[in-house]
Image (cartoon, rainbow over all chains, first blue to last red; front, side):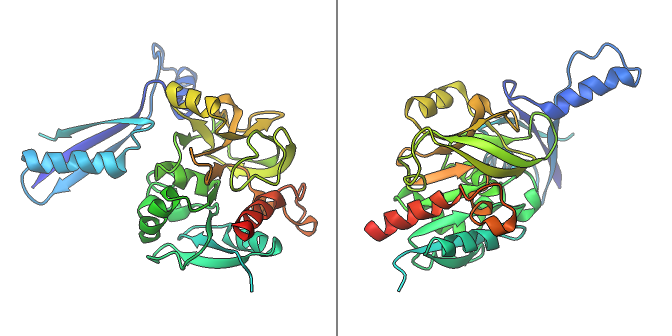
Length: 81
Length: 227
């Protein structure tokens, strides 16, 4: 069993109004020194078997096909230690 | 016998399919119910993807619907020229399915917006807008939380340059959509997606702000009958 993490983020040029709202809320809560917040999604994919090259390649395909909309989002795939 | 059969697709969570079917019937066409789990299009002459919250908008609006069994039949048919109209969630599905470029993202103001919206018809040459005049201003209801059209600069330039922006918001942009884009079409002009709701603007009796939506349905009927 292995766990593969897929992080999906809006591309830098895509406006993230939710992230902006969070950025604006932080100073009100007493948190200073935050320049920007971007909000994204994290998927934890549990594999039946080991996270070998073929399995990771499959997860990458899942991300491209379904988990991310590559028109507006970037994703990264990594195996959790 | 009606010459034109327009399929109206229902996914789990679709809301506007009954209004859509009624608008199709009022124009004089036959509305053919299509279920998301169907695998064939029942020989319809055109397809309407109505609004709602298909599959609960899980993951992204339209992301799951795109892979419904019916879409396996619809996507190639649309690429072959079948007229397809998507409103609101239907527009989101068309973008997720890559039948239309770009994507619909969270409204810039973060609020769900429900109001009567003035829009300008920019392209009266599509399968669904031929009964309008280019430049005509119409009023349609909008109701969505994720209607901000975005596309990369290259795509946006192509859409503008090729006259594929079909509708533009007037009198205030409800969602921060780039270039005030309310609706677009594909290169062939058979697939049209927009955030406003023509199917909610076909009868005075329902309190609609106008009956300006009728033109979508008379456009497609005329095209199919004359085909």
